[in-house]
Amino acid sequence: MVDLDTDETYDAITGSMFLIEPGTNYQFTAGQEGAVLVGGPCPPDPELYKHLGD
Image 1 (tube, rainbow, N blue to C red):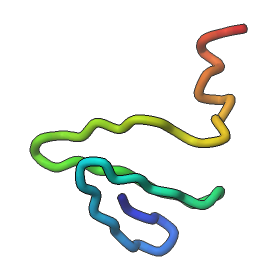
Image 2 (image 1 turned 180 degrees about the vertical axis):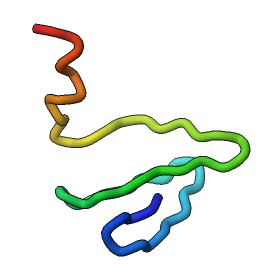
Image 3 (image 1 turned 60 degrees about the vertical axis):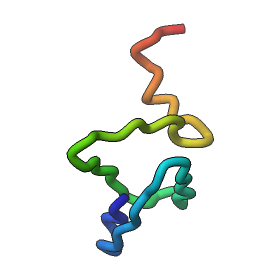
Image 4 (image 1 turned 45 degrees about the vertical axis):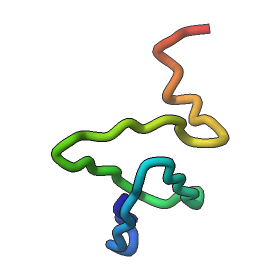
């Protein structure tokens, strides 16, 4: 994970969890084998679900 505000990078291993402060710009990148990300912003960002309708 890269904190785009500070340019700090954090490695993840299987089972890792990242707690990211609200308002932080961040980016996940994957290695050669890819990655599986489970979860999302908490509380959820309503914009992510607009396409589902009511």
